[in-house]
Image (cartoon, rainbow, N blue to C red; front, side, top):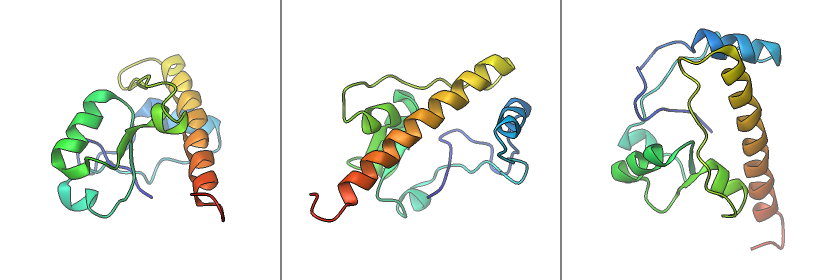
Length: 122
């Protein structure tokens, strides 16, 4: 499991908004550093989840076609394809909303993965 951005500044720390909102949820992002998604990095993952359609297009363009999905679409099994907005530059309220949305959608994605990998499920 990992995280990388399609337009990330390699080595950049998490934004102040992300740091503060994560601390509110007892998550310490201070050691986090951004990583640019490359073809080489992409090759090490069998599933890639993107926040928005522009991310999806970029990931597919560098080699992720067939294993890349919008996070909301993957977790909902296609019942929604709503993008998740990037809060960068927004106020703390926007960071909080995005945290909650990501938390919910990541849990749905993990639920799907667990169900699909359970014995006897194909």
